[in-house]
View 1 (cartoon, rainbow, N blue to C red):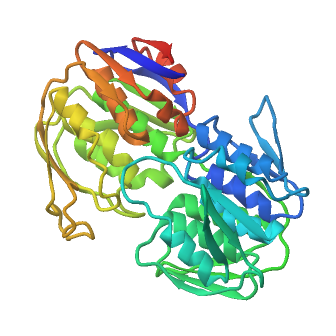
View 2 (view 1 turned 180 degrees about the vertical axis):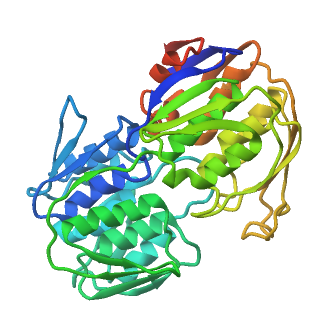
Length: 441
C-alpha cells in the first residue's frame, strides 16, 4: 500500500507545529541502551519510521521496549538480550541504515551481530566500508553472508587508534558505540562533532562512559567494563525545524516551531536572515515568517558541523527559486543531492547543476564527475505537476514547492517522509494546507 498526496497550492502555511527529538539522535540512543546492564528511559521521542524499525530490531534481540502512551517516552530493558534469527532480521533489510550501528553493542551484549542489507535515502554512495573498517580495527571478524553481514569478536573488542578520512557522522557513532565497553583506550581522529553526536556522548556519559572531545576533532574514549542505564531527553530535531522554516518562506507564511533550538541552528538562522526570512526567537521555540518583501540570493556551501548542514540545503533551495537574482549552492557532503531539482525544473524553476566546485574551496567531489553545484536564477513562478519523492529531505522540498505552486500537484512516494517527519500530514492540515490523501495498492 502507498499513499498519494494531491496538493492544491498557493495557500500560505500559517500556525504552529511541534518538533520533538532529533531523527539523527533518537534511533542511536535507542541502540545505546543495549550497552547497559539495566533499563534506560529515552524522552521526547518522535513517532517516525526509523524509531519503529529500531524498536523492531531491538525486540528481535530480546530487548523489551515499552512506550508510555501519554508522554511518548520509551523504556528500553536489555537484560534478556539474545541472538535473533537471520530470517527475522532480514525482514528489515532495506528499511533503514541504522542497523549497522547495532554491531558494537550486540557484540558486547551477546558476542555477535547479523546486519541485513541496508536501505536509506539514495543521495550518495554512503558506503558502510567506514563502519566495517572501524569494527575490524577493534578486532571484529566481518563475514559476508546471504542477505547481510555477520560480525563477531572471538577475543572481544579492544581499543584502537582510528583516523577517519572524512568526519563521517555514522562512522563516529560506530566508534562511540563500540569503544565505550572495549578493553583499553580508543582515540578517534577526524571525528564528526554535530550536536547529535555530542548528545549521544551525553547519553553514554550518563551510562558511565568516559569520553572527552578535543578541539581538533579528536575524541578519546576510555573503555569501561560495564555501563548502567540512562534517563535522557533527546535534543530537538534541528532538521525538521529548518524544514518548516523554509516552508514558511516558500509559501509566504508564518509558522511557530515549538521546540526549535537557537543554539543548534545558528548557522541556519544566519543564512535564513540573509535570504530575507523573518524570525522571532523564544525560549520555547522560534517563529519563522515571510516578511513581505523580496528575497535575496546568496552563495552557499554545505559542510560538516559547524557549517551549513546538508539536510538544510534542499528545502532552502526551493526558497531560493523565489529570490531576486542568482544564487549558487555548492554541496560538499553528498555527491548526488541535487537529483531533487529535476522536479523543481518541471515546476518552472530555473536551476542548472554543474560538475565543477562552484565554491570558495574545491571539495572531494570536484574531480569525480558528480553534479554537485547548482545555480538558481529567480524569481520564477512555480506550477503544479506530478512528483515522485526521491528521498527524505528532497521529498519535503517537493512538498513545500507544491504547496507554493499555482495549480494542483500529485505527489507519490510520501511514505519516505514518515522516516523523519512526525505526523507531517497532520501538521500540514493544522497549518491550513489544501490537500487530499488517497491510498493505492
